[in-house]
Length: 144
Length: 131
Image 1 (cartoon, rainbow over the protein chains, first blue to last red):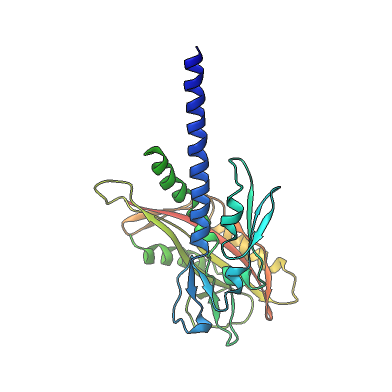
Image 2: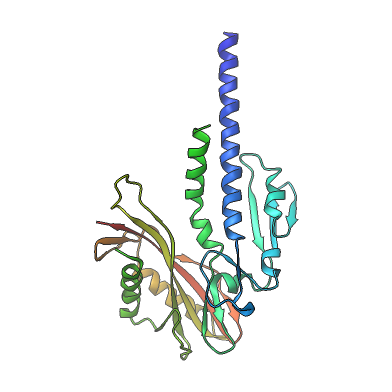
């Protein structure tokens, strides 16, 4: 009976470890994707892709605030890694780009010459890929 | 089935509804307000079959309602509500070599002021699969 209980306990621990691994890695994947930089048009770029954050002075990328609700927050381009260090399965995290131009950059705006500047969707596009990130990490965890 | 087929079919449906003037991505246009600015955003393309041939493309069409600053924001929302009615959940649109399905209700995002404009964005999500 003691052996059985120990086996179950070990199984539960292993499952919990895998859950945490998948959650941590998937959140890190989505945040790394959202923070992947591309040269801003004002800095000489002639084109852009959706899903990457535009970087001119680095203000937008550096304005990321990562919060582990009930467990503190961090500010900066890699703040998600700091906040993730305290993460346990079931915790809620919030990521906010606090620069004033974050929303126009995400959704699009009007340029000085009147043309419509398309949104970069560096948040939405990567958030929509979250399930794919999870699936890839689940496959990895199952192979461990 | 390719991304152009998906984009053109969805954008054509929007234009045919005559909700407002439609401005397309990379078009050098600055029309009278109000108007709709439309952008096609592919998110991912997957094929879970070993042999291939079952491509699924997922993404969204971003529709920005642009109105004059100072006017009631409800004018922008009314236009986007019409867009939402135009793309109900479950809608299927046939394209060459595939079908587009609208998998969920149109998402409505917060509005914001931009220079002398007010903008509000709706996202029309799609799943397109090869047939």
